Amino acid sequence: MKKVIKAYLQLEEHVLLMIKAEFFVQLIGAAFFLILNIYLAKQGFSDPEIANFISYRFLAVMLLAFPLGFFIKGKALKPFFLLGSIGVPTVAIALVLAVQNSLFYLLPMLFVLWGIVFTLFQVSSLPYVMRNTFVDNQSHAISLNYATHSFGTILSGVIIFGFGQFMQEINEGIILLFIATIGFFGVYFLLKIKVDVIIPVKKGLQWRFYDWDLLLKAIIPTVIIAIGAGLTIPFINLFFFHNFQIDSSGFAVIGGVASILVAILALLVPNVKNKLGFRKGITYTQTTAIIALIALATTEFFAQYFWAFPIAVLCFWVRTPLMNMAAPMTSELTMNYVGKKNQEMLSAIMAAIWSGSWFFSSQIFRYLKSEGLPYAYIFYITAALYALGVLMYYLLVLDYEKGISSKTINY
Image (cartoon, rainbow, N blue to C red):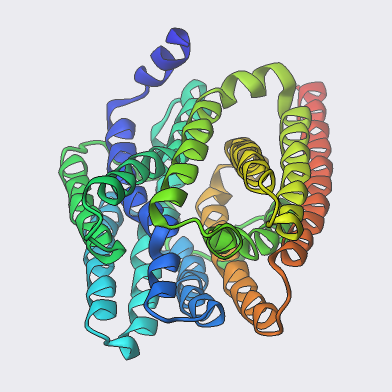
């Protein structure tokens, strides 16, 4: 483990500074993931209403990410990080205050703004890593970049659990305000960044500059998996809340443990990739995660039995780290597959896809829940989409390996 940690410590200083700043952005995002839905439910909002609010955030990212991909090409990325680091905690605080003061008509607009400021950081982080990291460090940099969400979830989970145990009179809104305020510390690390490589581009960038055939092949698996994920991930806390009466502090512990596992496995991704390769590494981890998700969903039908809850938690702890473990590998795969001139656009498209599909998935979820469909059936739909996505990734890896082989032969 010491060798693993040492490899990450040897990353470029400016990359580590960016990742540290991203940690504070992810800290806020993780806290809102863990308890915002429960907070809104306690304020009297129904599941369909909550899904509708969440969808506004994803709508904003879907609309902004794609043009942002064009815009950041050939530009320094530090200003986008700064806007995101200041904007995320600011909007998060405004959102909670709007709920506390019953200014519900502001919520759609605030969720849209929240999506916008998150996008500024989200779309820019992976291109920054690819521009400013040596090739030998890419796997570790990408893995650590992904692990920030896990580390953020761990710390926010500890904070939420601590408040729940020792300051029970404080509600979720106060906790979210506290964590959002901490999020401003990310600006400090960004101000210390001195390296921001700009890859020059020709003026009057044309649409035909990009290899759209490669981009299309790279994004198809993500589209399928993202649609499925949008039906499950944003609402998993409601699954535990309604089926097993797990409150904010309880789910913070469950989510925190899952994130510890995610962080550990994320740091091991470069080793896994080197030993198994993209083909086995992606396929094995995601297939196991799909099986765990199916088992998790099934516990809803046995919620009255004492053993259902521990099995649900165990399945969640298996599904979450393994599904997340594949993300750095799929990102590295697709980034290398499309080549350097397409990487900013791919990052933007990926952000648009995740948020766009989650927007539509949230609306689908809202409809399905309003019709009384159990969570289990919705999660089964996710599992089926995941399975199709894994198959498409497998085919993409074969195409990628074929391209490498042909280049080697030509050389």
